[in-house]
Amino acid sequence: MTSLPMTEQVQRMVLAMPVAQTLQLRFVNVAPGEVTLELPVTDAFSFRPGQLQATAVFAAADFAAVAAAGTLLPPGWVNATIDTSLKIVAPAAGALLRSRGRVLSAARLLTVCAADVFAVDEQGRETLCATLLATARNVDTAARAPAAVQ
Image (cartoon, rainbow, N blue to C red; front, side, top):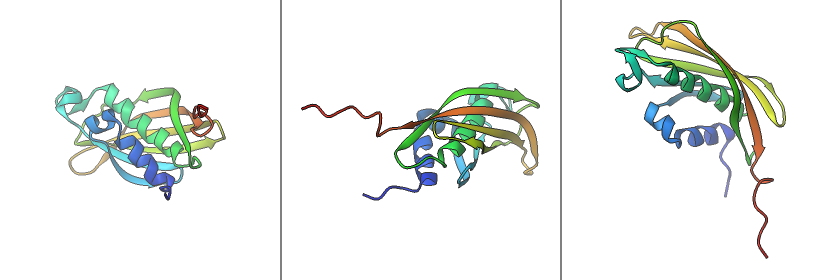
């Protein structure tokens, strides 16, 4: 069995998560160390018509940042968020959110990553609405597999 490139594996893993499906996340760009994703502004996640709650903004930022970190992992490794700080700087109002994640520092066990989230209006104009700094824990799944029972 051939393994998928990490960029493709990250997309599949994220899009398999129920919360990603519910938010209707869509990958726009995936490259080593960077990810751009979008999600529509929907009434289900809005506290006012056309303006998303902070929870959806956080999810867009977290998914983009930690997915970017995941693209640099070796085969057999996965990652998870262990710490974040989100700063909202403008309303998340418009047609969609576009989140650009990037890696700031990658090491064996921890990766520091970030994302900027933009509210995109019907004409495609972007307004920065949030920025996130995160730390992801990298885990070797082979090393954590249970030993075979004899």
